[in-house]
Image 1 (tube, rainbow over the protein chains, first blue to last red):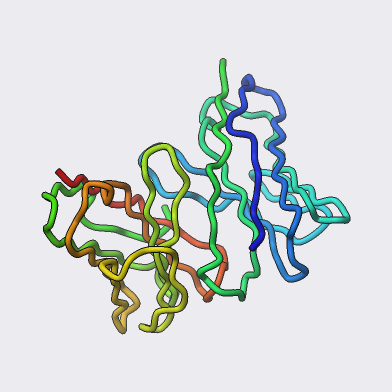
Image 2: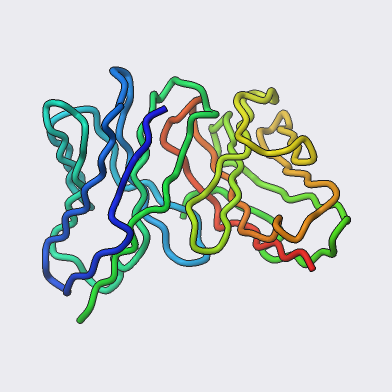
Length: 112
Length: 113
């Protein structure tokens, strides 16, 4: 089971780039890395998913080093509305559903 | 907007009662997962259903049970409610089984008194 470790909280300011790192030392060969964002009283929302190197979409970038033992979610030019909890999940997309594990996440606070 | 709807949005029950929560999946999704999220914690996986069959279960007692219907909507049933069952219950649908990208509803807030 690939356990993930993230910082409990982070603070930043509007317009800054924010990087949240997730450690997953025992990631398996078939595991993908997925990040979700959650606002209070809402369900998590998919942000980005990747397997190796770099993935970019309209919202964020995901950097994965060659050993895949960690990953970094990068949010460019954050705004107040990016204040949320961010979760990193690691697992095989076709693997057992019982291995779905959300950690405690990273609480990101953006200040004006 | 994920296309996943849950009802009711809020619910208050007393200890020992039974509760049924409902979820309507996003169109075209044949897999639904249920999660329990206590205040300040990440979602905890309860179970997943694929084409009306249970496809994986987390560390929850048998009094947590579920159903998935032919139209892929789903129910979560909890019997003999305990105070610790107070939480936000989330439903998520996905187009495939396992740990595919999931689309979450806004959840049902259950309070057990």
